[in-house]
Structures are given as C-alpha cells and as structure tokens.
Image (cartoon, rainbow, N blue to C red; front, side):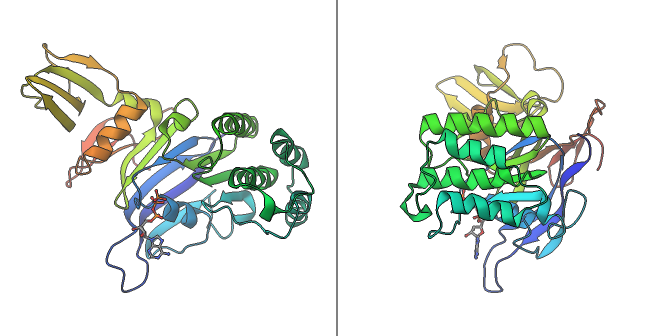
Length: 312
Ligand SMILES: Nc1ncnc2c1ncn2[C@@H]1O[C@H](COP(=O)(O)OP(=O)(O)OP(=O)(O)O)[C@@H](O)[C@H]1O
C-alpha cells in the first residue's frame, strides 16, 4: 500500500490558557500507509494527546495534522480509535453493541471479524457491557474497531488490561487482520515485549516532542551499544553512557567506524527505549520512511536533532 496515513507538521497542543506546559510541541512526523507503528514514551509524554488529534477529537493549538490525505474530521469514517478508557454503552449487551457498530457503519461493517474477536474471547453475547471485566470490555472495543474495517487504526494502550494469553491471541488477530487488509496501525504501549516483533515503525515521544521516529529496523541500525574501558567516544553522538568501575557501556549513534577497543552490538528495542527514557536530553533522531529511498543522509539541525532521509 502506498500513500501517507498520518502527517503531522509543527503540531503543538496546549490545554487551556492557565496550563503551564505544552502537551505536544513542534511535533513533525510522517507515517506511510500500511505500517504498524509503536507509539512509546514516558507517562505524560503526549501519546494519548497525539492519538486524540489523529482521531479528530482534539484540535491543534498550532501546526497541522492530516490523516489519510485529508483532515481527521473528513477521514473519521475511515478511522477507528480505541481510547485508553474504552468507552462503550454499559446498558447494552455484547450482541447489541455489535449491532450498533453495524448500524453506524453500514457501508464498511465487517461482521465476520467483529464476531470472531468476540467468539475468541468466549464472551456471552447476552451479557451487559457493565457486567464485563476490563479485559472483556477491551475485547468488545477491539471487535468494534476492527469491524469498522478502518484504514487507520488508533489504539491507546489497547492490551493494558488483558491477561497474557488473551493479549497474545488478540495481538495475533489484530496483526493478521491488519496485514491482510493493509491497515495502518498506531499503537501506544508501555509494554515493550508487546511491541517487539509486531511493529515495523517506531515513534518515541518525550515531553511532548518527537525523540525518535522512523522505520524500526533503521532506527535500531542507527544505534550501537558499545562496551569497553572508559574512553573518548568522539565523534559519535552519545545517547546515554554509564560507567561501572573502569567499564563504560554506552548507546551511541555512530558517525563513522567505531574505533578498536570497543565491543559493539545492535541494541534491542528495549535497550534503545530504556536508554532514551534515561537520557531525556539526548538529541532527537528522525529517519524518513521514504518508501525505497535508500539514499539516506544525515543532517544535523541547529538544535542538535538529527534527521536522515529525504525531506517530506
Ligand atoms: N484534558 C486535559 N487537560 C489538561 N491537561 C491535559 C489534558 N489531557 C492531557 N493533559 C496533559 O498533557 C500531557 C500529555 O498527556 P497525555 O495523556 O497525552 O500523555 P501520555 O503520553 O498518553 O501519558 P500516559 O502514558 O500516562 O498515558 C500531560 O502533562 C497531561 O497532564
């Protein structure tokens, strides 16, 4: 699938005139269609705020956001959004909830996938939503979202209240369905294990700003874990370094070959994310997902942030 699912330019959000800080500030990113994007960052980083903008539920204070080539409001029919608190009508039964989903989405409703998600959870279709556990409600919310047959699926910590087995099974259904239909998925999570192996794009926010963005394999490959006797790591960009005795361990962005004396390895996703969370002042890195543009050069911005790839 080609095209852009999500494009954000200098997006800023401030809640209320009395608010001290910005929930989002100068966020710029582009997500091509068909990607499964992990949205990570510490509490309060702005993940939910970004997803709510993409869903058309919040308006930017500054900057722009476009979804599926148009405004979030105009794309609403083609988007499914599962908010953190998964709002559903408590007085309806599971069956009535699915019927409501069908009636509200007559042109796109995929009854088969919605029914399958509910059946896989062994839910009583006549049970009222208010009688369900948190995890069971999540399953109904995901059934509604997939049944809508969206082009863009926005999930705010979707698996947080599921048991490990349900999480594994629902994630499998979600990924298989998205791959089959070319759905773009943006999924926030604090559970890195949940994202590893399922996402092909990474977006790390911190203090309302983009810290890391790009195709996951390229973002990982742009970093190296080095270990060795404490020494100078210039000219490489050091994201984070720690010294134990005389041994130094650092996550760097190499600028050229890493000299002798250092043991090197590509970081895991968890090591990459943890190092950036521990080092909130490390320069940002954006790698453009340029769909086949292998000619990625690095350029340093004036504020120390790094960008690679063609401008979009
Ligand atoms: N409706 C609101 N009114 C005022 N401030 C808000 C509102 N919603 C979010 N914020 C603030 O915006 C910032 C970003 O919040 P957001 O919920 O987007 O973070 P998050 O990354 O999703 O966090 P978490 O991982 O805890 O879910 C926080 O400082 C939060 O207090």
